[in-house]
Image 1 (cartoon, one colour):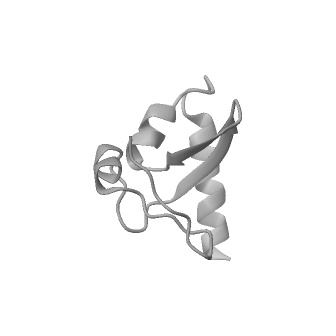
Image 2 (tube, one colour):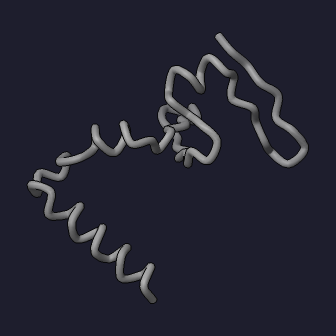
Length: 76
C-alpha cells in the first residue's frame, strides 16, 4: 500500500507505480469523488472514456451532442 503526505497547498504526489498502473501522465485530468466515506480519485484518461462510451444506452447520440456543443464553445 502506497502513501503520500499532503503539502501546504493541498497537493499530493501520486506514487510512480500507481501512475503507471492507471496511465496517469503529466496533464492527466482527474476527478475526485466520495464513496462510503472514502475519497475516490479517477483519472480521466482515454481508456476511461472508452469504457464509459455507450453507458447511457443512446447509441453514441449523447457523445455526438456533447462533442458538437464543445466545438461550438471553442469557436465562440
